[in-house]
Length: 266
Image (cartoon, rainbow, N blue to C red; front, side, top):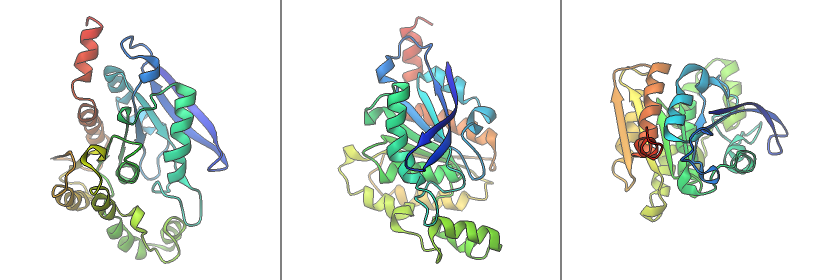
């Protein structure tokens, strides 16, 4: 493996921002210019290296011969903030181009996926559904998927949290359609089936966001997506997300792990 942990200068954000990248350079069967990537998104209050600290993400990525790109977006909910920075634009436009240039990742849509946990689960599905031209699939683990339900909660929150929410969504806490997953999943479903991203959702049955995930599951199951839903006993914690990442890798790259092992004579 090759491991990068540092920062890059973002023109979109107007500042340096954290970035962690894992590359499977020791997998001889992975052509350098065709290396697929998963953009792996952190949750609320976390940062760009949390996935490598709290899970076996590096080991899983090497087994599948894929790169992991882990950006940092503060507590922005992966939005172009009403009174703040344009994190959605950064993650969907500037970052993929920079990673392709710096790390020689594949430029093909079918080799690019996005996954995340909690706030990052919401972000992953939003990126995948708003930019199906960019991502072939998306996966949300214990995601905060019902942003309207979150808005109602934030409206009753303490003044500090309300102020943070208003910086993200606007003074009146009105959720734009492009930030609402239930709107996006219906809109994107109108595309030809070949252009739809594949979608995975996982959630623990004791997770406080369980109802968000089951509502999204019930909505998307009536639409023409390739969709997988998994639940099992669990709460909002890293053991659950480590297991979810393993499921997502096989969902995005079915059979790839075994094919690489065979090609390398293992």
